[in-house]
Length: 302
Image (cartoon, rainbow, N blue to C red; front, side):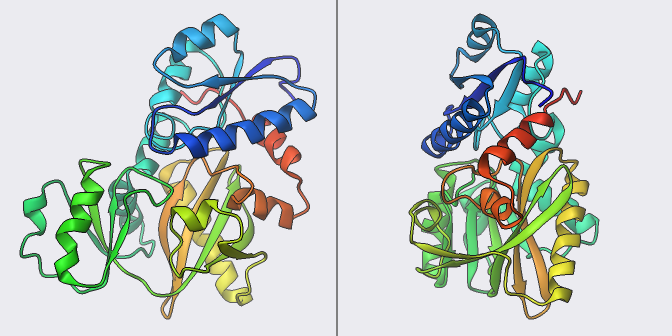
């Protein structure tokens, strides 16, 4: 409750392809802060953001932005320059985590198991490419499974890469890993209850993520103690390797060889179907309490 006497700006919306999800996350967090008695206002993070922050007299920023400009270090850098403490990771960690290719290179260098991949920045790079199918094609710097495809036929590869290029100038062609999907949320570096994700469609896409009833969530995940321990340790290692702060979420696939880290999200979703609040609830932490804990961690990182 260290910021009870400060004016809080909940940064939401923004300019990315995940704007609508960000508005849902932001409004849920705003409601939680209001219920706890905080002086909090909504700030739509558009091009006039510096002026809005100044004119509103914002003293602390709660970042509920997803994707480009909000999760990539851009807004974090602005807040550092303006001297406004903010939630979540700093500039560098945010810039690393949003770029799946850079993140995976760091994980590989640290000996953390992750699916193999190639990164391409031209459509010509995939013509005649010899790969083992299936593969996952995804933009390097988008979230919420936007622009992602699973390619099972080589004839579909070009169109899948073209679709991903609609959202980014760098695209990953990643080995498809068949296994159980789990997530480990972390708060200030501490792993929380593991959530298993079972989409009814078989693919945890945008609709499965944000439509109630489309996915079954099991918390705590029905996995062995040994595998649970490995997943938690892997999440802590990924969090540390990237240099994260505050809340984050590591997505993991468990195949026959054990867990593999897929990616880390530095601003996890905070909607009614989001995974961080589910993990918190599994540990007896209400949504409002979770939001307050996240706010308490706000700081300047520079």
